Length: 428
Image 1 (cartoon, rainbow, N blue to C red):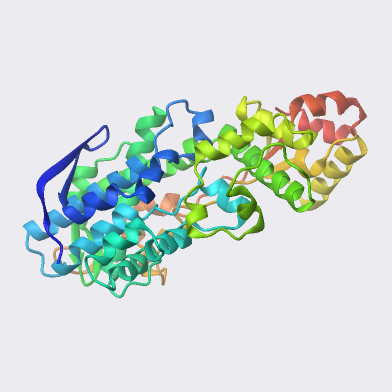
Image 2: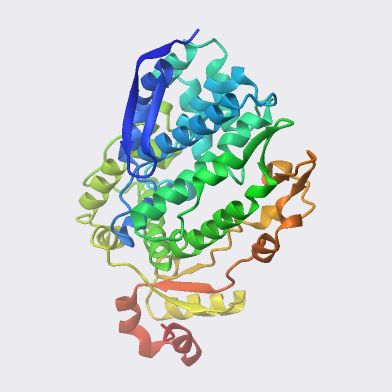
């Protein structure tokens, strides 16, 4: 049986003002090496190269998600809602705190480069031979598995999953507020207090009281703006492209038997796809950036150039076009190759098409991807059935393509390119 903490611990936080830790288990989880590692993983990956203030960590975000979840549960219990299972309080708090435990350095970029999934690694850490696992086992023998099942969205009570993973969850609310604060923009500023007051546990789901609809609309508009102005910023995408190319080139060289002047564990295991939990936990951004800095002196010209670009922020130029077909892409690649460029690394076509609002289409059968409004008669309706604003933004995507390339390299061979290719590349 878990005990309350002898004295409440408080973290001063720039977003939530204070983060309150009231359970000994939570306090001990925060102090595990696995959770402390999140201090060394940035929340926004390479966005600091675009927004210089975006240096905040997965550690601070995870504390924020925990705090929002704690506030929601406290409200449910204070008001005595019968649909909230009180015995799930600690489980929900632990899942909220630990939901990002498996993020690697530069988060989504390294996942794409090595076909990894941070939720899978989170579950491996929770269930492996780790300090976090030992702390969770003190609650109950099956407690680590229960926390993992919330993370992988298989837990038997959807309401617990809803708090951590849903279109209106503690995770999204914290990262909107926190990312807006640290990037210095106003898009992500939402009326979280109003939203939290309007949340209700209802038939194993977290729903929103109908009178809170406008606060939720504002939240969705903020999220929409943050995606296109921050998360999909073209300069950030350029740095992500170079980052993925570094990983790809280093992996190619490793498997080709190239002798690196600098190589440190666990990078070989990463390149081989054979990371153990212990090795994975040694990966952080300090290690990766140290490797990149050392690789700026490698004999391989391509790896040396890519690492120098990332370390010194010499990013690729981009041009935007409304549409592009496979034939045009193939023609550009062929022209690059004929001019002595390497189209595998000197050209990248990017089309950010994530649809953060597509899940709100009316009539969706995936209830876990819907925001439900509860009226005074205890009837629920999906948000887009009621909100004109949500209907107007559901499914919106920016259809513009971006072509990224090293400007100085292309400039040297520009006159050798066909006129139609020059016209495309010269738009920027």
